[in-house]
Length: 259
Image (tube, rainbow, N blue to C red; front, side, top):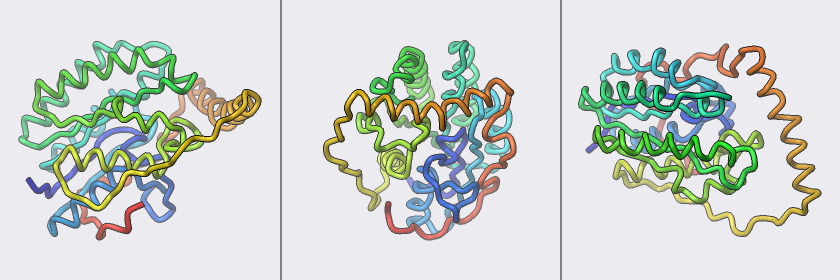
């Protein structure tokens, strides 16, 4: 089934943060752009919008992006939200996912195909390992909702390669270009779309000494964790001054060389 109108909803994951591209809107490319490029190569009338903005909580994604997305009458929608909620000190996952399911039901009622995502397993990172239980509960909700409403699912929890930090940007919160390419491949596979993208084989990881790990963690805390905490204390978000990178359905340039 060919798609002609793709609308992507969400936060930094879908906006493409971590996959820097000065020539792209908001300065980032990301997996959704990669998917759109491949779909556009197959369908001359293909159009793509991306309403995702970094830092958004699920309530904000649903309140600000859902109705504008449905107004575009897409035949394909991607939705990921909730990751920022899970990082907050307190979160009511049951209430969060009740709102999520209402949104999923609205999207599927239009007849559009819908792609959902589980969260990544952060077991190998000391900080995100503490969130593992929350993410696992979130994921079980997502899986059940996908089944109930006939949505496609990209199970990032099962993508073991994403446990490797070499697929992540220096802030450890966002995928880098390699990581976004892995997600694009997974989405295209879920859609049953043939494509030229290939998974990255990185080989063995470097073995760091305890001193090297401490130095790396300290540098990360100073450069990325502390600024993030300060923004939270001030009630600020990295996306407060940003607009969606592709607010309307528009044609997509022919697919660049895979990377």
